[in-house]
Image 1 (cartoon, rainbow, N blue to C red):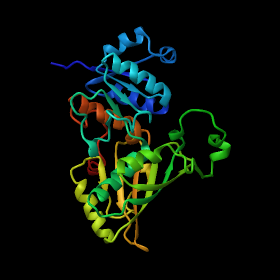
Image 2: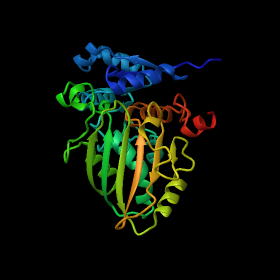
Image 3: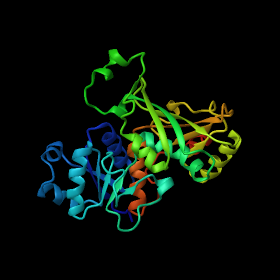
Image 4: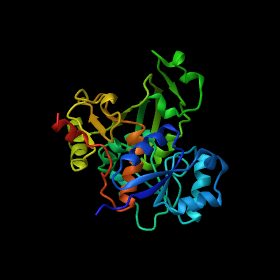
Length: 310
């Protein structure tokens, strides 16, 4: 007997992350999207909207921070489960931080899951295991580079084709909203600089960590920590498939450790798709866990399985 699909409300389906989440929900074997019309979203929480939300198993917010917080408060008051893709609640008390591999499934009674940011996701996956094992110092320099979709759909001169094509430049130096999120979730002091790339999707970080251990020990610890995580791959070397093109349209995170230390510093690397693992597919992963479904249901097959079938 075919099981009924769980209705998942979606606000912000026209944004980049919202579009990708909508597509994933459309293909999901146990969920279906319930899209809140743009006019309803602009109007703000109304009784009509709350009636629609109460019929949903959960509601996903792919909205700007201020709007997401307004809607989240109203939905929680109406007894609706909320997964928030914005950055509004990532450091809020009483909210589950939804990085599944590091923080697990939302505990019973959770009302809001805050989906991590794209740069924090990549940074945490490669750095948190090393910090937790005491292998690296808690002072870390991180350089990130991402495609233009991470900046959203708002019109900006620096995102015009004529400005960005064949070009790259740093942005939000010292003021990026992910700085506090990364530092708090790692429990570390970080220096964080981001670079905009002339591509649409994909994100890469290089972090320089101070350690008294050989790079091979860091690699072994990282590989051991993620050995049973199907969507996380630890490469033997950074030149064995770390490019962002290989992670686009996947839920994968690909990690690596540099083979040589210079001056006590070792580079470590991570690549993800900013709209998938950094937003929509991670939200789906969280929804699966929260609603009692298999963790990987409806997600793209992991890298290891794709390579085995080639």
